[in-house]
Length: 308
Image (cartoon, rainbow, N blue to C red; front, side):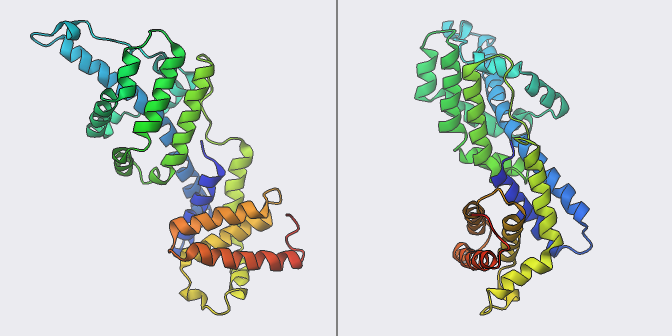
């Protein structure tokens, strides 16, 4: 699911690209933003697919061992609890999952086979996996709990996962941590009810899509005005010498401050200070904080900003 943290990040990146690219229209930038947000949401489904693909790979391994020339007794009659996990079965049969997969089929075994094998090795050698395999069967709560622990402990923090998604999509890497929390939230929902679970939509509601487009449009259309605010409070700097990413971040922040009356000022400031730390220089967080704070005080004094 796309949340406003992701939206702000994407708008800043698209705005930056717009300002440094000649002959780019606002419509082009809008299409780029919507495409980027859609690709990011696909990561959520890819992470759900990862758990299914790991299950299928283990089933293939068990089948291969069962059919080898001289299988052991354990290989002939393997413990099937992992591959028959009820959470995976429910996810596989989920209507939202089926519709998405039919529209955008995706397989980790095709795009990242080596990673998939390494991750399954990690899982099957873990203490959590061994404890689960020796536990009671047909315990749906434990089936969900296993995948919650495996995902949180081994999958999401994996450097190999980060490397794999970098090779798959340019849009995914920065969103991994957020989308991973949405996957954990989804597992928790399956723990409550197995049938008719609604997977997370791309936007929480229509307001988030509108927020994204309004934020982008206002930033691009009011460039001169927002830059004038920044120049007023950076008199000791030539604006050309300020990191341009800092300028774009501050323009986007000013857009939100002026155009979104329901979002508290402190929320906006904190979000863009964090973006400056992520996208720009080591000093950018402090610099952006100082400039935006001065702009907010001035605009409040002039009655331009009236919210808290």
